[in-house]
Structures are given as C-alpha cells and as structure tokens.
Length: 225
Image 1 (tube, helix red, strand yellow):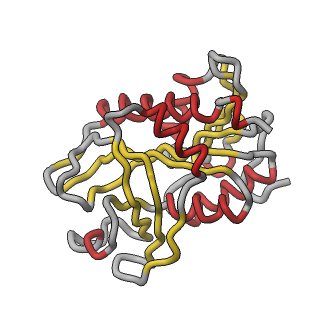
Image 2: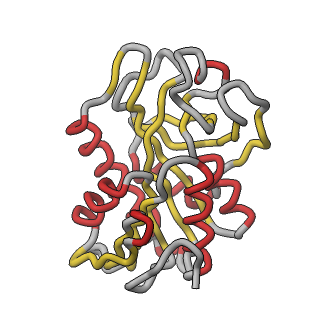
C-alpha cells in the first residue's frame, strides 16, 4: 500500500496532475464521465473515470511544492501509473509574457531556494510532449521552467533563477518521472507577471483548455502499452 495515497477506486495508467485539489475536482467534472473519487487522504483529492472518448484517466492533486508532488507521483507509479501531464500555474520571469499565456514545458531545472544553485536540466518525454504540444494548438508557446522552493520570498527572489517562468514542482515531477521510467510532460498557465495577475475565472477557462489537451494527448493510441 502506498505511503500517502489511499485509493478507493482504480488508478489509471494515464493521469493529469494538478497542484490544487479544487482544480482537480473542476477538471474531473469537465473531463470525466461519472468521475469517482479515487483518493481523499491528506487532502490530496483524486478522481478516476473515463473520458467521453472512452479512455481511462485519473486526475490527481499533488499539493504544493516539489516534495509533495514527488511523493504523490511515487505513490501513483506504485499504483500503476505509466504516463502523466502536469497542468499547472507559474510566475513569469520573461517580462514579455502576459497573464493567461499557456506554455508547453520544454525543459525544467530545480533551483535550491530563491538564490541557490541550479540542478540538472530535465526534459519532458519527447513523444508525450510532442502530442501535448500539438493538442494545445499553434498559438501556444514553449518555456524553460525554473522550479523554486519559494516563489514569494520577495520581489527579487524569482528573478534570481534562470528560465522563462518559475513554479514549484515541474522539475521534481519530470526528474522523478524519468527515474521511475514514466512518460511525463507539462503545460503551465502564467498567473503572475510584473504587470498583474490572472483572475480566477480566467484561470479556470485556461486550466480546462489545458486539461482537455492533456487528456487527448494521454489517450493517444500510441501511448498505450
């Protein structure tokens, strides 16, 4: 039995991972037909079911930060997960990015705190990332992500990292996914920039768009097996 999750329904081989439990519920209602809660332990809400296309899919909250996300991913792998897409949020480091921008992750690097040294760069699985990129559409850009332990340690903290955007868990998920031999990819919505922040209603719209693209990428027949 996994150490953190306590599944009450089968975990699919494919999953959409989000940090926020509320967003997991929202995406489960949007993406699954008759979703069943598959985990509520530790407030890490998870749901499993079938998409309208008939594909088995789990939508699982990972909590906040890299350590929490890595623990959840490890448990999911023990329960049969083989591929996953993170649908997350990020803060812009590139001043040209606007709130609401959707970015497919091309690489991620963990940074130790606000000003610590960077870790090894990790790329997403090329096949899954390619499918995700196509499903997201031509208007979606790509980004290098700096994953930090703290995003709000002062105005200068995120700027000390190198990348297009900063978040708190993409690097941990991609790195552990590679170690566990899972196919991993990620898409992020920019919610904070120097010019302002994205509203909750707009975020929900963008998260649904990303979740729908992730579900289609994960259900691609070439991903089976």
